[in-house]
Image (cartoon, rainbow over all chains, first blue to last red):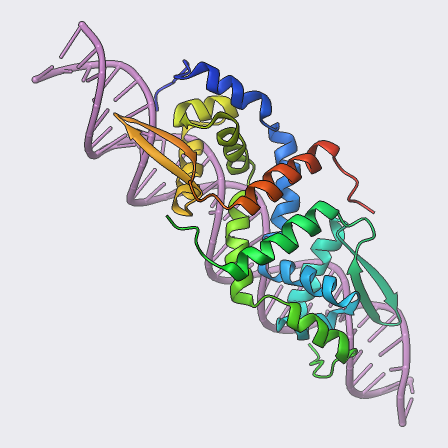
Length: 124
Length: 124
DNA sequence: CGCATGTCCGTACGATGGTGCGAACAAGCC
DNA sequence: GGCTTGTTCGCACCATCGTACGGACATGCG
């Protein structure tokens, strides 16, 4: 396994170190990112962004996934505070949360949406 | 399980449907996103962004993770074409790939970095 | 040449996450 | 009251992923 106690490029390591988010912060950010990094949940967010408000069944219909899958995805998003549920009778209507992080919406949903449409130039 | 063949709000479903990325496109985008949605890999990218170029051992040192973990993370990122390896003797020096998707760098690394530092206002 | 070093790979293990099924529950409708 | 519908939950299954370990390989050093 070898120990490598001595930096090869001490300056570069130092430079990396202070711009580096702590493991804790990184884990917070990635936990949110992980939520979005799932086809169903990402498309749920897109759908809610487009349609303002939808019930579970309609979301399942729009995404062409099972209602279980939609419900599960929404639960995850709701637990994280990314979407908001309004109960009306036996139905549940979802919309993006009031405090939906704008950076997420702007920079991930929109920009990454473009990335997808431009498509795949990522492989060297 | 109930079928829900009939939309409750047909118009909203339609609206959601055409702005909706296909399951295939979504899966492409999320596969890249999944790569970043990991503390180690995200911090690897941050480190490379800050230090230009680093070898595996130094990266492990900077992140305070095992060299295996660093190597594994780098392999993932390399397979996806996000980082680039330069071999010199027995060492491998990594840097962000030439064609590292700018939207990713701009909108995810930078902006989400801010999100992390501002911290947690996401819970309703 | 022999030995240590830096990195990589194959494998196995443990953990985590998404899906489907069945049941529960509340609410409308007859 | 019974019956159906929309949604949620508990559970078990299966896949996937990250890590540690051991060994491989190439390289520098004496």
